Image 1 (cartoon, rainbow, N blue to C red):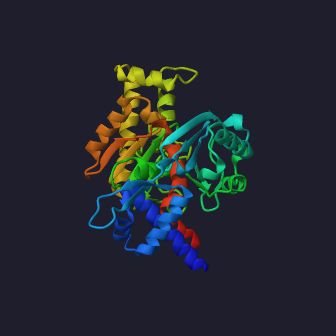
Image 2 (image 1 turned 90 degrees about the vertical axis):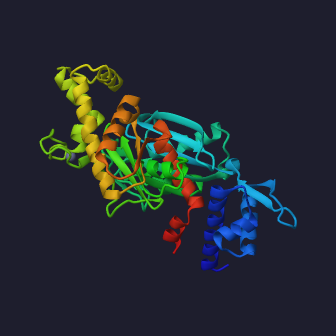
Image 3 (image 1 turned 30 degrees about the vertical axis):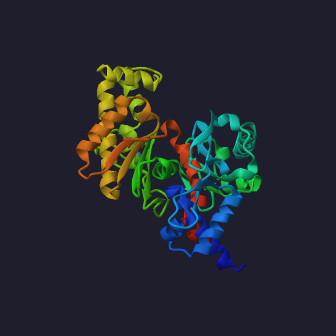
Length: 387
Ligand SMILES: [Zn+2]
């Protein structure tokens, strides 16, 4: 078969599979109407997808005169995706079904893996332990802190990560070992993608995912796909100025989101006010702030206000349908996420919805799995890569 005919067949198969995902159970003739393809094309595509195990027959629909039509739907366990949240301190891995629903999860410390080869070995062992045969693996998505070379699947020099990870060609290493497509994406972008595709929030095309952990970042989804920007930095609002008189930042300027509104900033300010040598557990600071105790309540309230100002500025720039809050700083207690939502409702004048992530602290790993699943459902990456 000629190259463009192969590409066309793959494009059609993805469109068929994605329609079945969104509209199933559905008949071949409904798919034909939905996609505007010829019936034989739809039938051949459906047959191939059944053969592959990604979809299954679920009996017959109502007859419109002739033989009742066969209905098909996505077979969730017909394949699985591997999502990896490669963090600065910990690595969370999820094995999901074809709807990005986690079936198995594990978290371990980054240092215990040694380096990229150690992670590859661990992923193989994890799949084996969970009884997930490698021939059902549809792809691997790795979500990591920037800066990244996503095009070539390579980490660059992620701040605060051991040197063994600097310049690691994650995608080619994993592709060689597992023989499936491997995707590498910024952590907040992956989380944004996961939530828009599988967060069950209807047809969300434009979204911002705010990932507030020790530092702060955001992922941007525009028209259903990650928007990376010219330097893969879109949404990186950690050095956006939100208080021109604020604390000095590591970047040499004052009042960046990271220096006045991150978990590190809260911990540092409380430590300074209480004249302590060491940081206290973040949960403890939040517990005292919730109880109205000083200086905790003032420090936390100030961080919440400046973080909300930063998020509101992003919302005015990108005009999303949905702003999703995630990361350990925001999810530590409802008090924090509710306070941010309250501030944002005051600051943002558009009708965008502001919610906490559905996926809790697994949002980034599920976003990783979504990158792999986008590879079987979405025509956009295929057009971009193959044309
Ligand atoms: Zn800065």
